[in-house]
Image 1: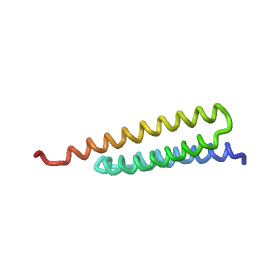
Image 2: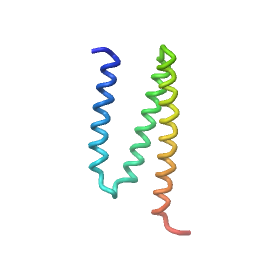
Image 3: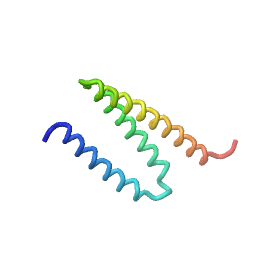
Image 4: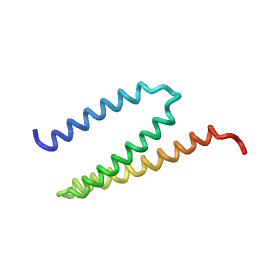
Length: 93
């Protein structure tokens, strides 16, 4: 199996597993799930940086830079949303 085909298979399996796991979460667990998703986005960001470091062609480099930008936006947005959700549980001063 070629390296690209193996990576595509891993990506496809990750999509299916992620969808199944997230779709079964109750509404009371959304804040902890968001915190966990932020950690996963951090791992995705590190992976995108590693791919950019090993890019051999212009297309690979462009796609990895796009992945870095999107993962960064997603991770920062997740932290902002988590912070706002946790603020709702704090008492008024």
